[in-house]
Length: 172
Image 1 (tube, one colour):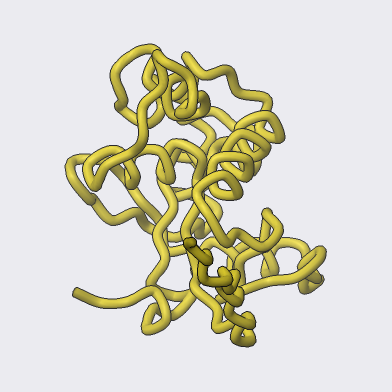
Image 2 (cartoon, rainbow, N blue to C red):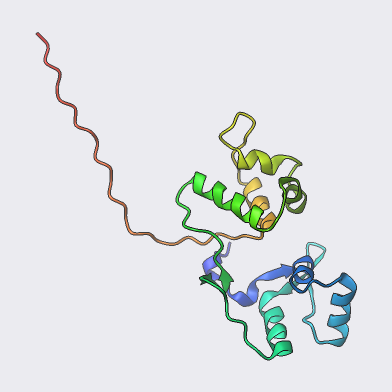
Protein backbone atom coordinates (compact mmCIF):
# COMPACT_ATOMS: atom_id res chain seq x y z
CA UNK A 1 0.00 0.00 0.00
CA UNK A 2 1.33 3.43 -0.89
CA UNK A 3 1.21 6.17 1.68
CA UNK A 4 -0.12 9.65 0.99
CA UNK A 5 3.33 11.03 1.75
CA UNK A 6 4.62 9.14 -1.31
CA UNK A 7 1.93 10.46 -3.66
CA UNK A 8 2.84 13.26 -5.98
CA UNK A 9 0.29 15.84 -7.04
CA UNK A 10 0.47 14.35 -10.54
CA UNK A 11 -0.91 11.07 -9.17
CA UNK A 12 -4.03 12.57 -7.60
CA UNK A 13 -7.17 11.98 -9.64
CA UNK A 14 -10.41 13.97 -9.59
CA UNK A 15 -13.74 12.75 -10.87
CA UNK A 16 -15.54 14.15 -13.90
CA UNK A 17 -18.16 15.46 -11.49
CA UNK A 18 -15.47 17.41 -9.60
CA UNK A 19 -14.18 18.86 -12.88
CA UNK A 20 -17.69 19.89 -13.93
CA UNK A 21 -18.26 21.54 -10.53
CA UNK A 22 -14.87 23.27 -10.68
CA UNK A 23 -15.72 24.98 -13.99
CA UNK A 24 -19.52 25.02 -13.57
CA UNK A 25 -20.00 23.19 -16.87
CA UNK A 26 -22.19 20.37 -18.15
CA UNK A 27 -21.09 16.90 -19.23
CA UNK A 28 -21.56 17.92 -22.89
CA UNK A 29 -19.28 20.92 -22.42
CA UNK A 30 -16.64 18.75 -20.75
CA UNK A 31 -16.79 16.31 -23.67
CA UNK A 32 -16.47 19.20 -26.15
CA UNK A 33 -13.45 20.59 -24.26
CA UNK A 34 -11.78 17.17 -24.41
CA UNK A 35 -12.35 16.92 -28.18
CA UNK A 36 -11.77 20.52 -29.28
CA UNK A 37 -9.92 22.50 -26.59
CA UNK A 38 -7.18 20.09 -25.56
CA UNK A 39 -8.61 19.27 -22.14
CA UNK A 40 -6.77 16.26 -20.62
CA UNK A 41 -8.11 12.83 -21.55
CA UNK A 42 -9.85 10.95 -18.77
CA UNK A 43 -8.83 7.63 -17.29
CA UNK A 44 -11.49 5.08 -16.42
CA UNK A 45 -11.34 4.11 -12.75
CA UNK A 46 -14.03 1.74 -11.47
CA UNK A 47 -16.10 2.47 -14.58
CA UNK A 48 -16.05 6.27 -14.13
CA UNK A 49 -14.02 9.01 -15.77
CA UNK A 50 -11.25 10.57 -13.67
CA UNK A 51 -8.64 13.17 -14.55
CA UNK A 52 -5.11 13.70 -13.27
CA UNK A 53 -5.29 16.84 -11.11
CA UNK A 54 -1.88 18.05 -12.27
CA UNK A 55 -2.98 17.83 -15.92
CA UNK A 56 -6.22 19.71 -15.19
CA UNK A 57 -4.28 22.42 -13.32
CA UNK A 58 -1.75 22.68 -16.18
CA UNK A 59 -4.57 23.02 -18.73
CA UNK A 60 -6.14 25.70 -16.55
CA UNK A 61 -2.87 27.67 -16.40
CA UNK A 62 -2.44 27.28 -20.17
CA UNK A 63 -5.92 28.70 -20.79
CA UNK A 64 -5.53 31.69 -18.48
CA UNK A 65 -1.80 32.25 -18.85
CA UNK A 66 -1.65 33.04 -15.13
CA UNK A 67 -0.44 30.65 -12.44
CA UNK A 68 -3.03 30.51 -9.66
CA UNK A 69 -1.65 31.17 -6.19
CA UNK A 70 -3.03 28.83 -3.53
CA UNK A 71 -5.06 30.52 -0.81
CA UNK A 72 -3.92 29.74 2.73
CA UNK A 73 -1.80 26.80 3.85
CA UNK A 74 -1.30 23.82 1.56
CA UNK A 75 -0.10 20.23 1.88
CA UNK A 76 0.85 18.20 -1.21
CA UNK A 77 -0.46 21.07 -3.35
CA UNK A 78 -3.91 20.84 -1.77
CA UNK A 79 -5.50 23.44 0.55
CA UNK A 80 -5.66 22.63 4.26
CA UNK A 81 -9.31 22.96 5.29
CA UNK A 82 -9.30 22.26 9.02
CA UNK A 83 -7.50 23.11 12.19
CA UNK A 84 -5.41 20.70 14.20
CA UNK A 85 -7.18 17.41 14.94
CA UNK A 86 -5.93 15.54 18.00
CA UNK A 87 -8.91 13.46 19.09
CA UNK A 88 -12.16 11.96 17.85
CA UNK A 89 -14.21 15.02 18.89
CA UNK A 90 -11.92 17.26 16.82
CA UNK A 91 -12.28 14.94 13.84
CA UNK A 92 -16.07 14.86 13.96
CA UNK A 93 -16.20 18.64 14.45
CA UNK A 94 -13.94 19.17 11.41
CA UNK A 95 -16.07 16.80 9.31
CA UNK A 96 -19.28 18.62 10.29
CA UNK A 97 -17.71 22.02 9.52
CA UNK A 98 -16.54 20.76 6.12
CA UNK A 99 -20.03 19.46 5.26
CA UNK A 100 -21.53 22.83 6.20
CA UNK A 101 -18.82 24.69 4.26
CA UNK A 102 -19.80 22.69 1.16
CA UNK A 103 -23.46 23.57 1.78
CA UNK A 104 -24.39 19.91 2.01
CA UNK A 105 -27.08 18.26 4.10
CA UNK A 106 -26.44 14.95 5.85
CA UNK A 107 -28.75 13.25 3.33
CA UNK A 108 -26.74 14.69 0.41
CA UNK A 109 -23.52 13.49 2.05
CA UNK A 110 -25.02 10.00 2.44
CA UNK A 111 -25.92 9.94 -1.27
CA UNK A 112 -22.53 11.25 -2.44
CA UNK A 113 -20.53 8.93 -0.20
CA UNK A 114 -22.55 5.77 -0.76
CA UNK A 115 -23.42 5.47 2.93
CA UNK A 116 -26.83 4.29 4.07
CA UNK A 117 -29.36 7.13 4.32
CA UNK A 118 -29.19 8.77 7.73
CA UNK A 119 -25.71 7.45 8.51
CA UNK A 120 -23.88 10.80 8.30
CA UNK A 121 -26.26 12.14 10.95
CA UNK A 122 -25.41 9.18 13.19
CA UNK A 123 -21.67 9.76 12.68
CA UNK A 124 -21.99 13.46 13.49
CA UNK A 125 -23.93 12.67 16.68
CA UNK A 126 -21.81 9.77 17.88
CA UNK A 127 -22.23 10.62 21.57
CA UNK A 128 -26.02 10.42 21.45
CA UNK A 129 -27.99 7.21 21.93
CA UNK A 130 -28.79 6.91 18.21
CA UNK A 131 -25.25 7.88 17.18
CA UNK A 132 -22.55 5.63 15.77
CA UNK A 133 -18.78 5.66 15.72
CA UNK A 134 -17.07 4.99 12.44
CA UNK A 135 -15.34 1.84 11.40
CA UNK A 136 -12.81 0.97 8.71
CA UNK A 137 -15.51 0.61 6.03
CA UNK A 138 -17.29 3.86 6.86
CA UNK A 139 -14.28 6.15 7.32
CA UNK A 140 -13.15 6.24 3.65
CA UNK A 141 -16.75 6.75 2.51
CA UNK A 142 -17.16 9.72 4.86
CA UNK A 143 -13.85 11.23 3.75
CA UNK A 144 -14.66 10.67 0.08
CA UNK A 145 -18.11 12.22 0.33
CA UNK A 146 -16.52 15.38 1.76
CA UNK A 147 -13.58 15.27 -0.71
CA UNK A 148 -11.06 15.08 2.12
CA UNK A 149 -7.83 13.26 2.85
CA UNK A 150 -5.80 13.13 6.03
CA UNK A 151 -2.17 14.07 6.51
CA UNK A 152 -0.37 13.18 9.72
CA UNK A 153 2.11 15.64 11.20
CA UNK A 154 4.52 15.19 14.07
CA UNK A 155 3.73 17.34 17.07
CA UNK A 156 6.03 18.31 19.91
CA UNK A 157 5.70 15.82 22.72
CA UNK A 158 3.12 16.80 25.27
CA UNK A 159 4.16 16.55 28.91
CA UNK A 160 2.68 13.61 30.75
CA UNK A 161 0.11 14.30 33.40
CA UNK A 162 1.44 13.49 36.81
CA UNK A 163 -0.61 11.04 38.81
CA UNK A 164 -1.99 12.41 42.02
CA UNK A 165 -0.05 11.08 44.98
CA UNK A 166 -2.29 9.78 47.69
CA UNK A 167 -1.09 9.78 51.24
CA UNK A 168 -1.32 6.48 53.14
CA UNK A 169 -4.33 6.32 55.37
CA UNK A 170 -3.48 5.87 59.05
CA UNK A 171 -5.49 3.26 60.86
CA UNK A 172 -5.72 2.97 64.65
